[in-house]
Image (tube, rainbow, N blue to C red; front, side):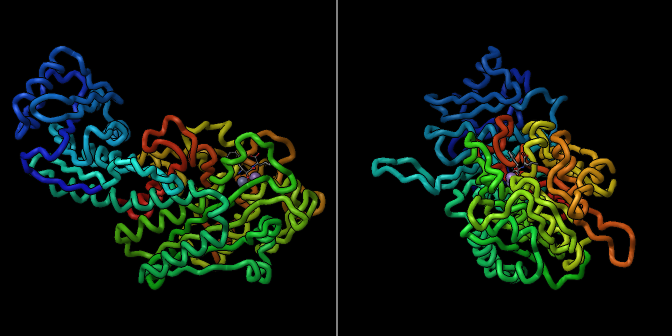
Length: 498
Ligand code: BES
Ligand code: MN
Ligand code: ZN
């Protein structure tokens, strides 16, 4: 999508008119340049109450003399939130069909700057589909050119709105990338394929350094978690380290992503229904890569680190078994009681490596870690665990601001005890019972956060379980289907303050 904000009264293409609920005529601030026939038809519709502008509603007008229009309901003005106007913006893109064409003119009137910005952001976020694997019919004459969006608003708000639209476009490039990676089929997106894409990204940008820890190196470094999970697959595991602005001084924010490119469960094989969805089990790594892209595109100047733990969890004669004891990079041993609890194993090495080698100010990991998190929170929120109140609050606020909810969950001592009472190893990878499964998983991860150098205090760390939010939410208006790109925006906002 291309977005230009100006005061030009001309209407290019289809007129898009955001309206507050209860509007009985066209807002006078939007009238300029609207052909009389179109304006009178819109006024008639609004006066008759045929379009009430309820939140989530849209109406197309075509076949009139004055051109085409798309009316968009903003809901009640006193109930508007950033998210409600963002959703109204997304409704624009979702409603566009062949008859509207690819050129639109959005006429704002009487909206606050932040609300206009969120509306445009929603338009941009919803402008995504994953068609890479669809063949085009010879007789398909659909126009796949970009949407050309012209925006008009009050003169004194133009500059800020254009800035905010440019930022939204930059951050959305990271969201789109995360979605592309998430949606990619697992036969094409395997650990080293992800790594190669990361290397290409590093080569494209002078201020990005990408390093790969390959399978052999992971073995010699003692990364038993990553190796144990990945060794059952012909496609070997690896770790990818992204550094944005590597020469700037640390300590820096570090994002760590679970990147299981396909999760069969391993020897503890999953049941067949919906197993295809386990291609999304690398969405933590997709978000991490997406955040890196967003930061580069928005021109972030500070050092930021991303680490992704890539493996394919397969059953085979080389696969790890339930009962195996592995030695992780931290030196701690883990009793593998269920090979389907693999995300925590690869993350144990990624977290310890990040904490000890990369000079973090804080560490945030993202993982499609547990079905139990989906049981607890459904598809409406990611679970959020942290050893640091301040970091937890900041992530919660950033998520709220972006309409990507992260909901606080507990790290009770009892959960840590449960995960560290293995009869034969330091840590067990499965809770003693099935209750509180997302909390015991978080408590496991906490065992692999090193202390701040020279102290007895852990590095500030937060864990986001995105099992319910990475895909599958029918209520997420920012996309049609597939991978969501969840928390690219949250983390970009948290890191940059923008
Ligand atoms: N990737 C899954 C978690 C998952 C399941 C995410 C369904 C989204 C939807 C993870 O690796 C897993 O299998 N977790 C197990 C853990 C259990 C064996 C302790 C789970 O949730 O059942
Ligand atoms: Mn699993
Ligand atoms: Zn998994």
